[in-house]
Image (cartoon, rainbow, N blue to C red; front, side, top):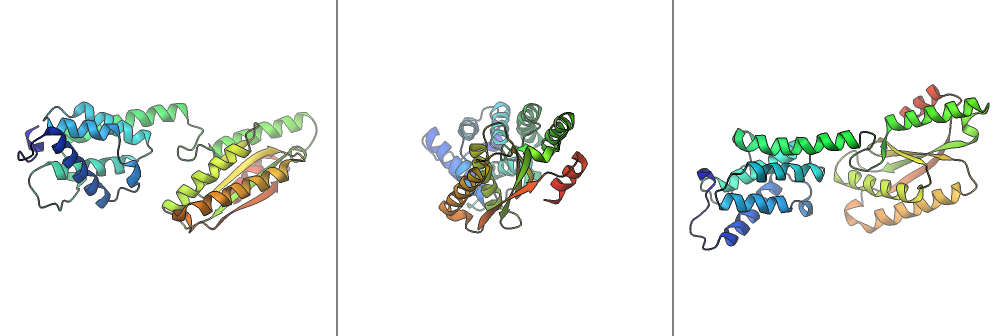
Length: 267
């Protein structure tokens, strides 16, 4: 694709690739790429090599879209990143570029978007009961699991709350943004680590999780261990200073499944 040709004053292809990669990253960050340390990938290098060699970009861009989806980047962010590449690799400029997704040719958007969509479709088919960011199960899955617990309790002629309880974990964090999102990732990892004996750990909201667990003498000690682990991990990351603490609260199960679903909605 001739419109993507680079400055012919560069002597070596590898040097031109590095220069393109550097300008692309700078433009992408300026356009709002949220995770600088996660921008680089083998797909980025393949795209740069194809641009410099003036090769067909369909396959490299499809791989780029797939890599972004695998990393959890949304379609809007992926296309914004593509726009940054198009801005720095097209025409002449003085280093100041505008990454405009509407300016990217359809022939470049299409393989990138298709590569992204293929991965998302595959992940959705395989992990529809999991939150893609935290790995915790969804609130819908927890409602289904509670339905099973109540049916089992009813068949045994005893209240579900005699054997099971909910542990609600809520994060004291800003209303939105990177700190809360990453803090919940840390909280989720702790919950999966501590409650790893068949319990159901689910994400109810962006800053609230719940664990369906059996009542046992060891439960208070496990809750204390989880709380301390969360506190240590939040304190260790200076980027998460806005997330002061995570509150752990044991919540009794109500008499029936409908009331339990209402409880989840209120947490």
